[in-house]
Length: 565
Image (cartoon, rainbow, N blue to C red):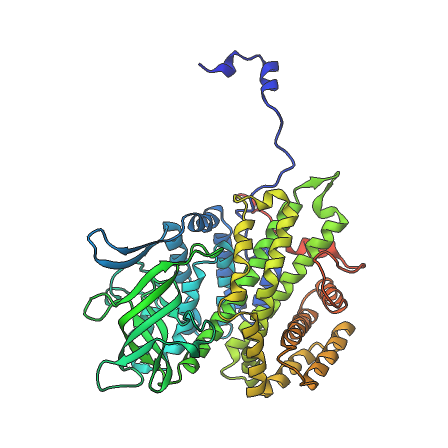
């Protein structure tokens, strides 16, 4: 019986305890590209205006409710490992939710894994970075195999015989997740298996050994690898770049999951890692029991062979963290434009304006630096200045942007309040994801040491860095004083390694400020310099100095749902 039908209108009113009002709503069905003004400006400024239309289409896709839900589902249903089938055969099979496969399929169809290699042109890296940045706001974990596949191509090109056999399929816009030999596929993905228990970032401490299978040795020759890898992301990739010891020293190898005869290569997955974030991405421990592989590059030059690959993966960490900042501040701005407290909409209240504007500034600086490095990557092969910027600033940016993201995610979550802590909010995933890029592909200390190494190995990069800053000279007095003080840091070489974080912090802020002074609206550039360069020591978000146009910063960055067609 429908008991509601027996109630009088007065009784029905009494049955409802309250009306739901003054609450937020999901940020879905918005244009993730067009409503990110800083991104649109950067794409045009850094040389990829030709990609504006494609990015507009992609931004509407990535901002749609259906597509955003793929990211939710891919993390709600993490990958599962079957080491054996039910008959006892070794299979080492990782199974993913269909949402993960759809994200992979879309990323590869749009060339996030290969477009600068297959369609080289002015702005190719900028356009690819913008696409990757939009995709990463939907879901970060699947970006790992996309990044590794993209980054593997320069390493493979070091050995023409391997490049000829593998690069066409690695760069194809075809995603084939089947657990079958690479010969049966039109498109392939590449992973990395570098680190071991005893060494971590110190890969020269690796103990995995490579044994030649015939009299032939050196680049392109076949070896069998025996040892272990403590951290292998995306074990369902079709092949992996692996480091192993030979008589000539640490060398790089290409190791497929299947042997040419169709038998399974003994790269055995022991277990999947249980990570605090990056849940959709399968990370694993493996043992190599005579796994067949081919040497990539020169014997004993394994680190040199993969160094360009690592620079690409580190750059993608910058993109991913800048994307995380944008996703977090977009959620905070969206919510605070709806929710009222104490009689006023949150984004109209001075203290909340201070916090929101500060979060916007952090993202603006991160995105400007990221896209500047993208332009350097586009031009480095023909411009020594751009090569120096790519060589030095990738490490600076990877360190600084990735390091700033966890606090940024937390502060944005606090803008939501208690609801932001709930697992049905986007913020727990954003927060758990935030530290990952700071640790992967070289932690903060490794990046700072790489900055020092680049300066010592190629002193010209220091001159290029200050030449880059000089382009903003006279645009802001605080920046000019900051650069002068930074030059003094370089003049004092005492205990430079001990001071490395201090120096790299100041390098990052100087370059972010210089880019914003040159290219951003005055409200952005002046606020960034006043808050980042005018205040020394530790600071919380929401401590901007007086006299800034916070409302303009908030309006510039706030997303909104698209009107129905």
